[in-house]
Image 1 (cartoon, helix red, strand yellow):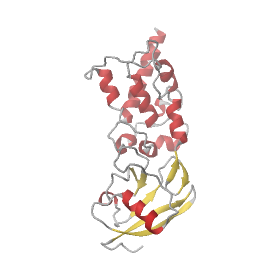
Image 2: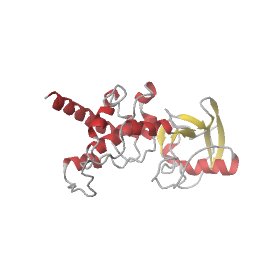
Image 3: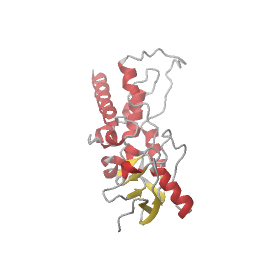
Image 4: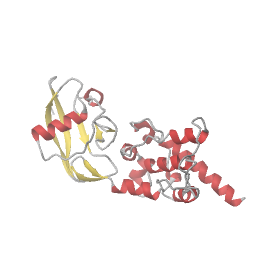
Length: 242
């Protein structure tokens, strides 16, 4: 492939479903151009059949995530200059570890089903207190704060080697969510939650490669959340034995 000119950008885009091919488009280079700008221009100006997802464009929701030149990223917050390959070109693919619906759009049902399986929903305690005093400096509050900003974009799940090997693995996002709830003093569902993440597809399946932590666009560290779940599981086992 010829190197793109300074005024044009060569973009390889995945077309099809699980099987398919890359299609090359030429897109004008512009100042401050994001990857989402590039995808949108291709869809609007060159091929209206291209399927992809996006929403607010300001890094608040996450559905625009793609694999960009080998790295899972939010396309709305990634500038072209940050992501071009050594040859000055871009390669855009759907997120890994998800079923492809079409082109760059993936099916996320299994991803969110794993949040459910990890008991990633708030479970009111018996007292059902509307307000609880949770000092910001407390260890539990700080542990929850470390992971609470996850928006479920799927970047960590796409980057996770264990998900690639084991499709039953709950994954870093679901386990991170479970950890935030373990540290929520208002929650009454921790016995069931810790049991749910202690199975063969739960926290002990993590190999601590830290890809999830490296690639998280919100600088969350799911690896440490998973380590916290392992400690909580062991503490629960010792309490029950005692």
